[in-house]
Image (cartoon, rainbow, N blue to C red; front, side):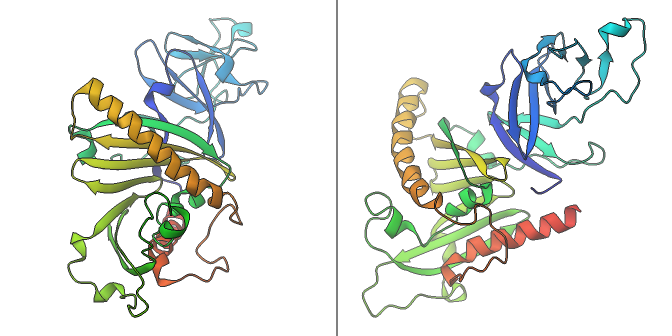
Length: 324
């Protein structure tokens, strides 16, 4: 996993009044909301005897270990050891790692870093989705590293083969480009798939004119993606890393052509049925890929149409190196 990045890890509605224990980024985490409504996240392992804090309870703004009653605040510091008495000062060594978490767009984002000090950037999100869109989400776990799940959405070559009956109709097997552009850590790639008439040759990226008028998709490092269908319709995904072999995918259908909440919500729910079909067409193939995790150099014979995947791997490698 890449340090010093904002990762979307859960939907906000998944953390309510009770503590929630999850595995994300290879770590056991417990999240809770205090009486003040503030969201907290610390390592889910009591520093005393190793019990899970996630099965404990909330006392005001703190979480109580279910084993011996140790109280932890949002910084991961133990504030009370009941066996020692309330008058006893708790040594600073009784502490677990805490994580900065914030909420945006109905998602919980975690700042993944060894330290909570220093300047922390704003959460990177597709800001246009915050204005006027209605969305619905469905989620599922795939037994692959998040890089495999994410790269599938950057793969512009697979559509006519994996999605023959859905979004890949038309047998458009020739891939012009694609054109890839970066702005900070957001990759936009422009796609032009055409039918192979036996005479047409694929254009290189620098041969494509007016590429900005083409169909486009975005990937925001490290783990969110947007399919820009048109001004009023988008598909959005989070690839939340659980561990080295599992990923939770949150897929959302956004629309604002019908902004009435009840009817618009019905439309988004129906659209997600179709999106689930498409995602499962991908899943059938992606789960067979070996290895489960990808790297920049891994013995694959890539082709020009794989440029978004290559660029993603290069950027991951760069971010990992600069974070160390």
